[in-house]
Length: 432
Ligand code: C2O
Ligand code: CU
Image (cartoon, rainbow, N blue to C red; front, side, top):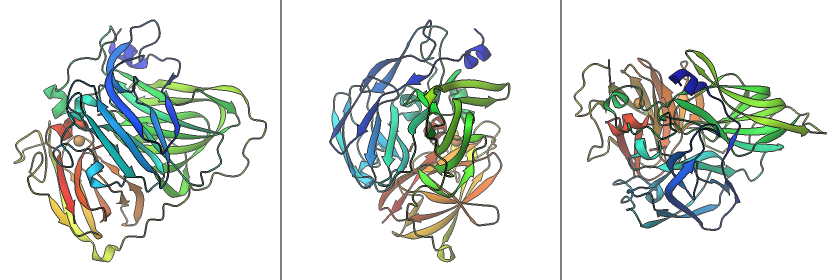
């Protein structure tokens, strides 16, 4: 099998487990799992997962609820869980050495926090994440609206890729320096994994896309109906926009509401063309398809930021292959510093608004993630764009963001190409 056939091979839909919505304490037990990534006649893959599967179980809670999870670490190496995108209590953020000590093998740590905003989130390991996430330690976290939009199906779609040997084993090239200095660990097999296998013709389906890959920018085409994009990174768009090809940087999410006219298929755009990621099959038809246009999701009630008083800052990304020189001590840097400084890059007074220019002086795209907050992307004309927790900045381009730092604590700011994070592209801020 050559690489191209490998990437192209297409399988029946792969399902992952879901829980009902819950406020009861949950247990997430990390440990070795066997995953079925290649088609049935190929071998399964030994990975890590939660409660016996990768992705781990989809956790569902209601907005405003408290999520309580006891994390039992049987993964054989230290780990933590980060609740990506949730504006949570800093002590529960899951960042080793910044917000907690890594949970050693055999130990248990209890996470408990309130979930203030509805939307599509995810959880993932945050210790040696470039390896642990690639080995499968992650899962979806869905926060349901108190008044959810009427849909017939609500299906989570996890996008991921894996670097596999021909025998189905994960390629043990973790920490490979070429990956670290280039685009990260790209897989040779890519898939969409679903929380539900079927729709009826005529169903209105909410599709919650999550890019769980450690490196791949997922360019995704969805066929099989007409749809609207209703949210990014969990946060509703004020006005839904027509569904076109999507681009999700690692860790980004997009919610689509689609009226299914047939099987709903997902394809990855690559230089060689489109590759099938999988499809949601059609079974029967809906006798009473939704007729009303898709409207916006309930507004999250975020006060408009006061931009007149915004602190102006620049965070320049440096390093990597073809990236020129910088003064950091590792492959990648922010403002000529690699890795975690002892003191925060910046201290913000609680409630302070900052306009930060994210300037990419490198030859690679970077999806920059701020913990514990969302921020507005600013459009070229300076108007407020999408409200996100991870923003994609193309090579040699810059993007301004406007953030209200209103969540007290120590918050990581890093590239979500996890090899870049591991080799220098990270820093932290403190809100007090
Ligand atoms: Cu999704 Cu610092 O992580
Ligand atoms: Cu990066």
